[in-house]
Amino acid sequence: MEELAEGLLKATLRALGLLIRFLIWLIVELFFEVTAWYVGWPICRALSLGSWPRESIGEHELAAPLTRFTVSVVGILALLGIVILLAKLTGSA
Picture 1: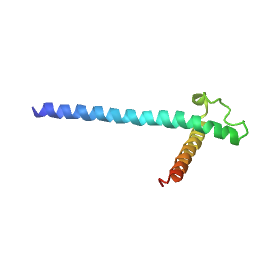
Picture 2 (picture 1 turned 45 degrees about the horizontal axis):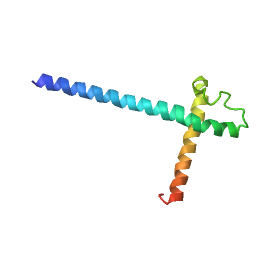
Picture 3 (picture 1 turned 90 degrees about the vertical axis):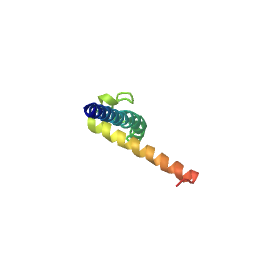
Picture 4 (picture 1 turned 180 degrees about the vertical axis):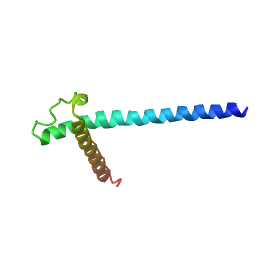
């Protein structure tokens, strides 16, 4: 009986670990690589007067890793700035 309970516990923990890994992957893929790219791309394009990044907005998978990272960081910083600004304007911060 103890072996059955131990096996069930291991299976539950393994499934929970897989779920957590999937959620982390989803957050990284969806938020950082897609959403942040779509927010950062127009900002980078405007700041570089239309010359960078060379890939179109829908071609984030074709961009070089450094370009993807930089544009995504710009997008995250912009989103963070908007959140901070909204918090100050609404009196939440």
